[in-house]
Amino acid sequence: MKPMTAYIVLFRGVGGATQLPIARLRQVLEEADFRNVATYINSGNAVLASGLSEGEVARGVAAAVKEKMNFEKSVLVRSHSEWVESIQHNPFPEAVGEPTKLHLFTLDSEPEQRDIEALQAKATGTERLAVRGRSLYLHTPDGMGRSLFVPKIEPTLKVAMTARNWRTVLALRDLAGAVAL
Image 1 (cartoon, one colour):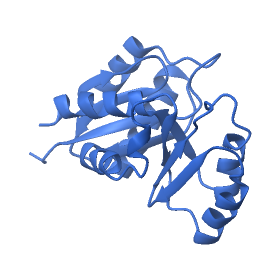
Image 2 (tube, one colour):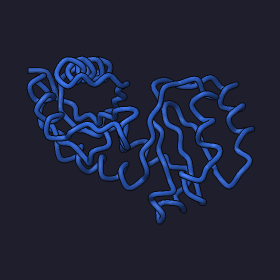
Image 3 (cartoon, rainbow, N blue to C red):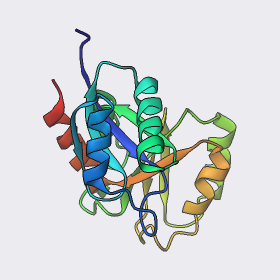
């Protein structure tokens, strides 16, 4: 039997008008042979265990939800250990006390250095950012909803991504830790 890895599964573009019913999502992922499936709020977050690689999990989840739920959005996946490492490398530890103002962007791939520099040049407000590998950390002291900078991130980095606030980041860490085998 293959060793199982706990994964965090993030769907892009869920929220507002686009919902992903979590009870049905759990059922679909279990039917797709993922183990210990759990979901967190209705905004496209799941954790599961699998013997597959990160890429295989992303493709398997995307195919299952497309086929069974007619839902076609990008899926980003991180192992529990990589997620924990991202939390440990948070460059803004002083911001964790306001978890809705600290965000972890999960990137599909590492952005080019020139694109990171271009993005940093656009950060002229109160926001602070750091890119580390396939993670982008953003502290928005005035709130994410008011930020004029946030809409510039993805087009500037030219990488698919999805963001979660720090409260959700920690909740997913704990949920994935519980499914780890």
